[in-house]
Image (cartoon, rainbow, N blue to C red; front, top):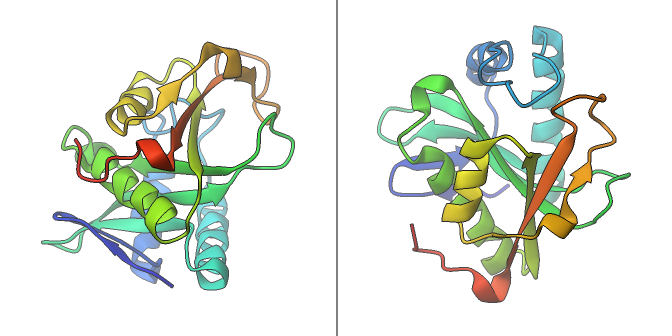
Length: 183
């Protein structure tokens, strides 16, 4: 399994010590504002097991993210194939951080490492990012990554119940447009 490093972060496999802060993040309604619900501890445990199984099998996926200087777990970031049933295919980049880590550029830094890995190590031609239409924070990260948005790609996420979170947007970045060091 690969581990990714940036100046300030380590994207790595999951540890037992990550479970408590991960479950706390997923129980935080502010962190989960653009998801239909918060997660139970059992749901968080199950997600970690899936994430680690994917990392073990493929060598890439949803990595745990820690601050390199302190070892503090702050969330996750990485890559995953788009779920079946979506109106598009490909590999999606994603991220989610605990609230104390917000506002430090960590999401962009972690996402940039994952996207760079997708292009330089996996040889992918394109990476997508998907979020609820109203999620301005994630959309700002997508903009900082140099991703492009086309309103024609907007869709109603079939996995989200009817309501304000269902309308989703897709951002795209092609390998030829990727600038690894740009912030």
